[in-house]
Image (cartoon, rainbow, N blue to C red; front, side, top):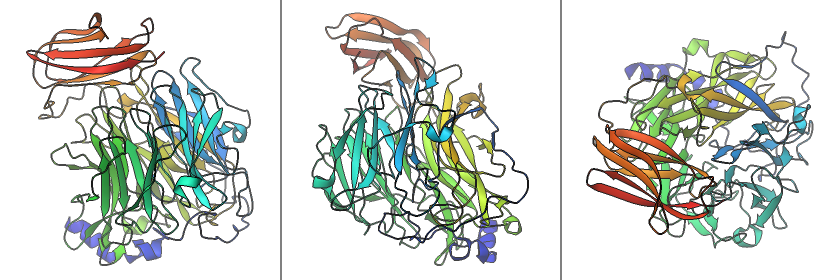
Length: 583
């Protein structure tokens, strides 16, 4: 730890003020702050272009954009697995190459259909791939799906008659691209940057903030009606650092935010167990012991990403930075995982940095050396975290900004320990920005992770007046999970489940459901699906099992729609849960 302290104290060039870690006025146009017109910059003249490539897995190019700035604070959910239906993907879209108004800006959508194994909207000109979600100028949104129908649900903000306000779109069917809209303006008024998340019963949580950084919460339990806002949610973050996650297996919802005005910068969360109807008080999230000595640990504005896993456990991933006195430094940056059910609750994932002499340029607006982590899992309960990380020696000569790559790490013991990070990309003369990992890996042998991100041809944002407009590809990288956590790696000793548990996902199901179950002790086990009157429909597991975590699939394609129950029995203990089949 003393080495960390010495690095921070001796290298002031790495600090916020000099290195461009964050400019709190670095907000894209229409957010209450006017930016000057982007500079007219000639095309790259630094030599031959080195194409970007995937170091692991394969790439699907699903769209394109010139709007190269997707979020001011933490990374938002931009890709979702609607199990049994397909993959929903979203990005910020424009084709503008000059000016600051971006009149065609929109949230752009594409869909991978499991039935056809293709993306719905692919054009030879990738800038034309995908479809616009909204009928007018919109932006700064994210995506989820309805757990019953599997159809996409997209949030955004747009300029209404009174100012910027949230809007939510719901697709007619998975991948249809025919959207209905819920307008928040009459209920929520002027507020913006509204992350959304959809819970088990289909309630849509919306968590916006005003230009003055006053946060509020609303939800849509019955389409298209917004609930009266709960506001203000305090303490105020002083910047749009807020995020939201809703559980797909319970009524739990979690709000997170970071206080950019604190020294060091603190983090808070607020939770609900009834789909956002009532809330606990705001609770400060404890700080991980990332640094020592006189070096404080500061959460970063790009930091907090909440996630409920299939076992209904709350997980939060964060990137933290070293702070000495009032100065935040960009290296070494660390990625950490928080879970209240773990002991310890905070566990280290990754440290990113370099020798100070090797840091050849700044990271740019609203960034630290490794930031914007997001989390997903696979059907075996393994956790995965992806983030963007800069390369200290890969400099864009036009803008003097470092280029970034995408990294991922995995855990097979609920986040207690993490395998070494895997570098997924080689950026070449591009920059890989704003990665978002899928919430649930695609089922297979092995399962497949998907990560969506932008390949920015010139590092440094056109939207932020740092560089020229370029046609940037939007890609989904598909990675076998066993390339992140090799097969045969044993579970960490001491991670035997503490209680008997079983969770079906998706639930409601469109015909195929994965039931993950946990056994705290070795013994005879049965997992049986029953119909509504108690008749056994199918036995999914039977026989002796070692203590541990397992999964079984119920293929209910020939079963009638309705209410079913699944019962897990281990020795003398049983649990029964409801499962809804909606064909």
